[in-house]
Image (cartoon, rainbow, N blue to C red; front, side, top):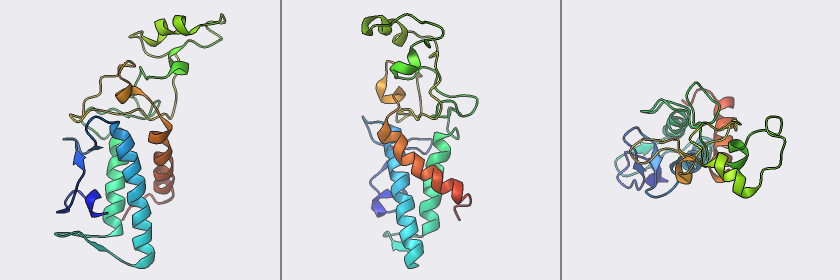
Length: 182
């Protein structure tokens, strides 16, 4: 667990300048949501056993773990250098061009004719905002420089996946039930 603590002498995770956990070449929010979930699980264990963990130059408490998880969630929801919420439909500024077929195609109400795969590419490759907002989806997130291009063609940054969204559901449920991490 000490490898997940930023000030620990054994830390093995990297952060963007804005504070997001990242893994070079991967989906940054996948790592942030998964690690946040793991931090909360460990915090709950430490609480129940009344323990702290000695991470070399730092003693880590359950509060430290919860605060670190909350920082990641705050970043995802808009407290980041771009002021962008990586949850589609949350806040005033969120991704508009996500890598998702259903979101990029017009609704049946607006376009009742069948759209084949090849015809769908015209919509998917458009630089216009997606016509259907996939509310609640978390996209892949920014690069290691905290920059997000909002380009549906960049699947690493703009694709919402279950392995990004699933751990965040647990983290958000915990934080909703426990709004004060300390």
